[in-house]
Length: 354
Image (cartoon, rainbow, N blue to C red; front, side, top):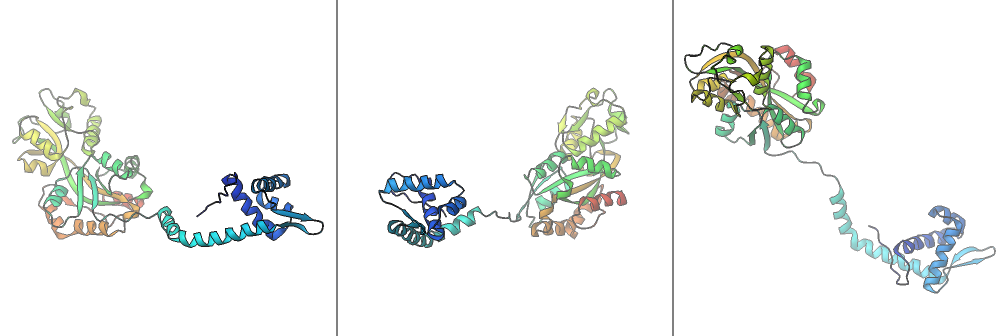
């Protein structure tokens, strides 16, 4: 800790601090030239400093004699002795404060969270697990896949849940996920696979068998919200079928979960909606299969070895969660290794098991 004298004689703090350092150097060197160099000032500047101080004190600080160099006067030596004693005393008194200040200024590593915050694309299996599972130490909130990845990149959550279409090319997957977070700074894990398709009323009264049928006159669809993985899949399917979503009745009707889409169809608000098979089964709807996706989790690499993440992996690979998956129509276990992987290993799994 630094401090400076206020001698009460009109010298500023800067001059007082430089003066004591100068006197200490003169006591050793007894020559103005080396002291000026050590202080980073000119010979004239050093002499001006001493003259200003002597005028303020009304006493000489140095004496010069032929062959004797520049010596401190008795008054200057007493000033140095007083400074030494004061510094020794204050150092002992300030030590606890200095220790506390050092601890305050030292960067601290952020401890891994005991309760993970998961921002995730809506999923029935995860919702059931968190709501009904025992000792599930997570805080789960639903966001679209894109929003979940952005939340992870911004540090607003510890884990992001998102889904990728089965068969997506490695380069396409890297471009999409990498558009929201840094691939090298995160780890990835495939939890499960889910069958996606079109939900229609029992008996499929409008004979909807594919994406093109959604655009027929008289068919009302229910959409998913922008930023969700399902919405991205819907738009890709429409583009592949050369359909303009804006021309489809109900395209602007957005819901935020698979359950909400199923409820809209079951209640007659819509004639068709895109969701997973399990949602169709839950609401006794017919289902037109379109494909399968991978439901994945992403975490920051720094959390990969934490106790909370290890526990999460054990629970997701445990018998209880797997039984929940088996009980849901259209769900299967993920095919990758039971650990969070770097992007290269994860992407290799996409190709090998797709």
